[in-house]
Image (tube, rainbow, N blue to C red):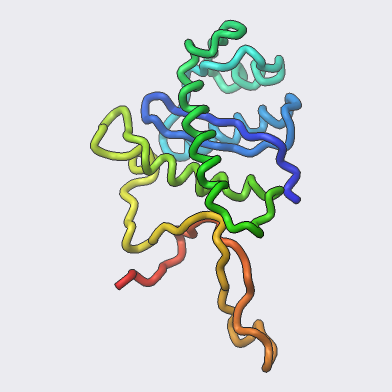
Length: 194
């Protein structure tokens, strides 16, 4: 069990790119850690947020972290979620995650839902057009062109059989271990489909 209880959804409104981060709880320190990690993630790709638009349910610790990061922030007024542009994004991410989760194998452990988030984020950003250039996806803006032939996409949560190498198996043992597909490994080369 991973211990994650909720997720925070970040969006860069200029590039239309979504970042989904699982957190252990809504306690102040966990969202602050998610914010810091997400800011670093965007910074590594050459993008830095200057203005954050947030829900009004924000802790003083988060405001301190935002100010310490030299960022400005605006809060949505209570019960008025329509003025926060992230609300539409939250609905999109939630609907996409529900569809990813619905496609999982019946034996996929439900308490491991957070393992599906990287695949959810990846496929969602492939589908979202960038606001800078509508001809490319939000994924392309952040990571570069995605090669579908080099890395075919599968359905997250489906049952797989992973080959065990000769050194990892007994003489009469099965030649593979059952598991579930979680997400692509873009650093590994897969054979192109023929």
